[in-house]
Amino acid sequence: MNRREALSSVALLLGGTIIGAEAFLSGCTTSDKKIGTAGLNFSQDDIAFLDEVGETIIPATTTPGAKEAKIGDFMKTIVTDCYEEKDQKIFVEGMTKLEEASKKKNGKSFLESTPQQRHDLLVDLDKEQKDYMGKKKPEDPAHYFRMMKELTLWGYFTSEIGATKALRYVAVPGRYDGCVPYKKGDKAWAT
Image (cartoon, rainbow, N blue to C red; front, side, top):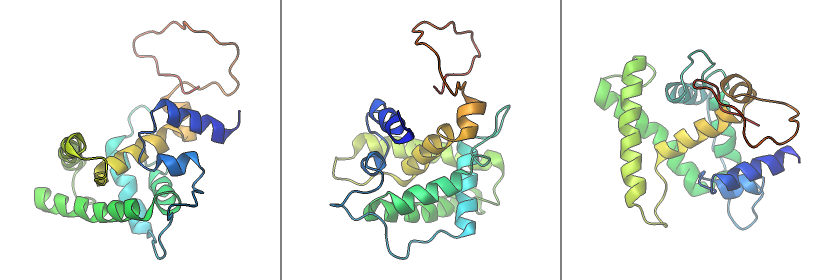
């Protein structure tokens, strides 16, 4: 099984719930949908901003956080290369909305806010997106924070750091063992 088949299997196991899953499964090569927006360009400041959003979602503890997994670069690549134009627009506008929400709630930009202020803001946005996603119709667009959160989780747990430091990883697994002893506090398996 190659990497593309493995990632496709993971996406199917998740029920294809990742926004942009169709592009993900097809390797970002769908011909009937417009993928990629001319002129969509993320600056280094945008990537640093996304790194901090990711780090707030998955902070460094005894394991590395999302920033060390270069989550900002991952988000930029997926949004630029795989998202449909309408989803790209929602994501980019969402970065501005998140910044405005930070200024409204904390009186300062997201990057100037303390880690606790960032956390509290993202908890509020997560509640907002859950309410929105619970009420939205299939044709309604996704919530921008849901996109950011999904990309953070996807990028982190499929990165080398996430798979080897946050999860247990066996590069070449042996036989199938359907009942592995689990002790409280053990890491989940990446493989």
